[in-house]
Image (cartoon, rainbow, N blue to C red; front, side, top):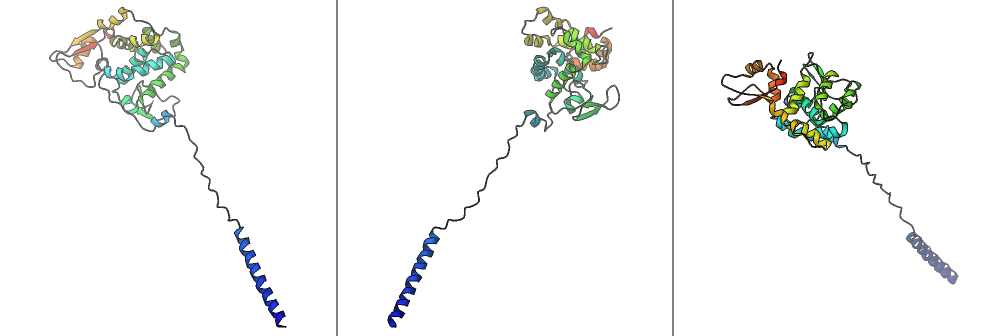
Length: 275
């Protein structure tokens, strides 16, 4: 009997050990749960156009003289000529005249150098007295966009189509056709453009783009322009009456921002503006 009990006891011990071994063996083969995979999604890269960046802020320029105006914008006018076929001389003469060499209100506050109004315009705008009170004019974030819009304005409107039948170096014909097409109401508008082109020898810019040399006769035309040397007692008003021009015309032609004059100062007055 004791032997049976001992055998049973030994059997229980063996069974217990074998069960423990199985448990240990099985636990060593249990695979840990995989950690969740975190996927990093890269944001899409959106190309930013330079014009969009520049349009986020308003750029202003302080121009002191017509010469400085030409230094700033001659390259832009020549580039527009290459792209759209508008003589750089015409573009710059219009810019000088319309913006008072970059010192007029529309140029300073709206970067509008050509007096282009809001026709079919969805961008920013400014109101300014012109032919009527508080007319709507286009506003640009950078002056260079005003030059581009000037090119588009002329090339996309059928009434200016005759311009592009003219020779690119015939600035006189361009000036007259602009008036005929209704760009300006001033009867002397063509004469003013022609004077500015000859005064500042802007034809050279056209010739550079066209790749031809300029005849000396064209270079010397501006030198025949009438000048007035300021004397004691002279005012812009008295000078304007003497030469039958307006004060504003004298200011524009000479890049003047005010009415102050100095004795001995030389002013340009176009003989073409006389009756």
